[in-house]
Amino acid sequence: MEQLIQQLINGLALGSIYALIALGYTMIYGIIQLINFAHGDIFMVGAFVGYAGMTTLRLNFFASLALAIITCLLLGVLIERVAYKPLRKQTRLAVLITAIGMSFLLEYTMMYFVGPDPRAYPALPDFMRATIKITDNIVITGAQILILAVSITLMIALQLIVRYTRIGKAMRAVSQDPDAARLQGINVDTTISFTFAIGSALAGAAGVLVGVYYNSINPLMGILPGLKAFVAAVLGGIGIIPGALLGGFLIGGVETLVAGYGFSSWKDAVVFAILILILILKPSGLLGKNVKEKV
Image 1: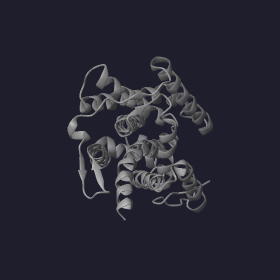
Image 2: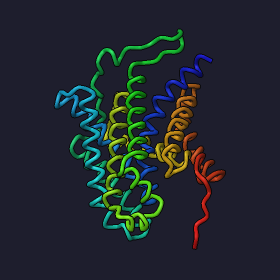
Image 3: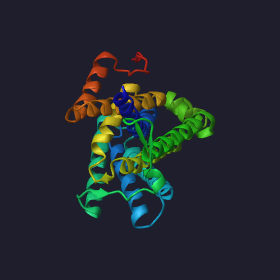
């Protein structure tokens, strides 16, 4: 039982990271029905910006986190304006191929500047490396508390923005019907750019948290976590913000349980098996509803 509790605690920390990345997928899909496969690489850029902030600029953790969030926010807007906006009226396949191309561009641009070798994240302050020992087999680390605190704070901030601000109401209106929203005076292009900005900012924060959690980053690190976060978004119901949170925590929990019970080589296979099962049994996701499309 103690091992189960320990793995669930580990799963909460990892799941909160997946949830942050999955929020970007689900928000962008909810607005323009685009699977932004470059999203995982924005997460990678955030990890390297945080690393540069702590090593080159000598900033503390929170200042480096803020720098990563701002940098990825601007990068997300730039990618949307340059790569996706000109294709707004093109087929979904054209936009999807562009997203994959943008993913490779980010990966190999970063590799050109920093090289392919992994980098070790700087050591955290003592209070973040402290541990809370509940029993002999149940331990909570300061890094896990930090990851959960940052993730939950950002998730609450997102909910407040979406529910109670003017731009949040515009986002909900555009996700329902872009043409009707435009007739009501909503600037649809600005709303879409804002959605990319918020989603990319959350991914940047997740990149720094992954650097803290695994203590290692590399230019290709965004591929697998990005795909797992996509699975989390589909599992919860892509386009639904609470679904992304639920899916992220579920995927994180499943992965840590599989690894914790001695099947670490199977953890990735189990995650993608969940994707196959959810697409077969409930394609709309756990919180999604099947909606008939009018023709």
